[in-house]
Image (cartoon, rainbow, N blue to C red; front, side):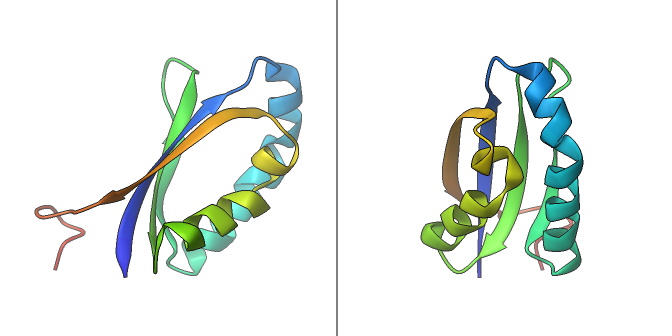
Length: 93
């Protein structure tokens, strides 16, 4: 399994995003419990968020993103998915 870093940039409608956030967090928690989402959270400046997934390939990550309430409800302006070759750190065996 490969690791992927996803950057989400929030759209302009903060009120709508905040209304969708509880569903997004339930979805994210379910992925974390399955060991798919390793970490995730918003940037302190409120511009977006970063998430780290473990998945077979980028297409699998995109399918997960497509099911995320944030993307389904259109509150994300853009996402960037990058495969990440983690070499050092506590996540690396």
